[in-house]
Length: 611
Image 1: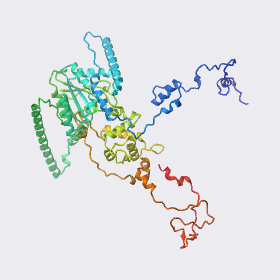
Image 2: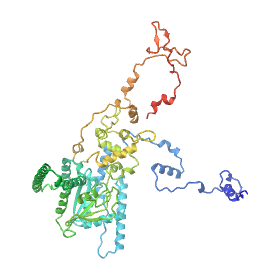
Image 3: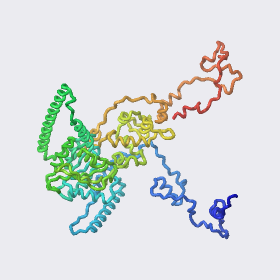
């Protein structure tokens, strides 16, 4: 028995109403009645999608659509950006002008203050006062940023994080700002130092220059003198070196099994132990002499205000400095409380872990990893008060500077050209070539031979050398830029900013070239095409190619009637012979004459697809 035929009435109604071919339309001026009046959007045919964030190009198209204009009307206003130009870089005059404006408006860059409160203030009143004060502070920063197009670093916009900072300042005897030694002034917040003194005049401010192992001894002296003139106490420290030194000492202190050693090995071990003891005594004597010399020079130069030492401190020396630095009345009796404040990526958590010789706090480069402040006891006389990582407002020249200094995440950047161009202006060409073992394209004839390389020139050479290629066989510049920028942030490509009043060329000296330059002509043709070196032809190359002597010879079109006889070319080959009268004679008839055979174009022009 066959299957009963189902009723298809519903499907027919749907096709009649929504079918593309059966859609009823009404011509203009017609009195025909229909339900399809077309008085609004046909939501059934649209693929609706929520848009919360869009790029500048998408925003432009959406704005043009809302304005009722077409993109073709504005086609002539498109400007082509040459990747070889100095995209994202400011001229010297523009940079000097921006720095001058930042110095003039430095006093307007503040952090939020906690409103005054008393014991009679209720919790609701305090919350309302804090919200009002914080809102006023944010409005002031927005107005400051809009004025003269001043560029500011991203700052913390959550009031709860600033509440943690207020608590840390109130509970601490010494407020330590941890900054990056390569660019301390960018991470230093002078208004925080003023706020600490506003809370209590007995509290002390201090700046800890972490990653000081990137600085030479002479560079640390320059910075120590600068902060002496500013009247700020600083200390030089390296969390990475301190952790490595502590680990090495632990490995040296591991006990040996004397029963397994022979008599000769025991004698050698005893001699080594005695030498270590004598060396330790000599080091302690030298340290005491250095301290006496520093105390003497400090007493003799009190008028000049010299008080900072350029020595790279160890863990024990840093702890001793914290204990003996604050001599006034303390918040907690018998205990020195040190509040640690700093940007992400400056090594705040690494400093704490290095002092404790174990992982006390999690290390992260993302702001907001620590939600609440923590109190960590080093011993019975010293306590650390760890503040959540706060990104404080600060002036910055361009976004490229923020990416190079680690303020903006590299993995989330959209345009890699400006920061790489800025990096090329800071790091010389020969340092980049020696570091990565690459050869960057030279400037064209007529350009400045000493100009810094462009981002495209560096990234093409780096990506090709590392094998970073796109789907169409081109070097992946975007991927290579992330490796290069991270090497700069991590210190592999080192550049240290000079303090004000010191020439940058004298402060940071780059090493000389270590590897000899390679001639471009010795590189493989495929690499030259990938790095676009073959496109750079000078006038000398054009002249050589134009005036090059070429052997003239005749060309024969079509197949010859005599396949075994070949015309004489410009030079007689093994297959063509001539007599003294110039008569053509047969070559080698026993050869298979396949020279006229048609060949596949893909194989014939394979050299064009090598890259």
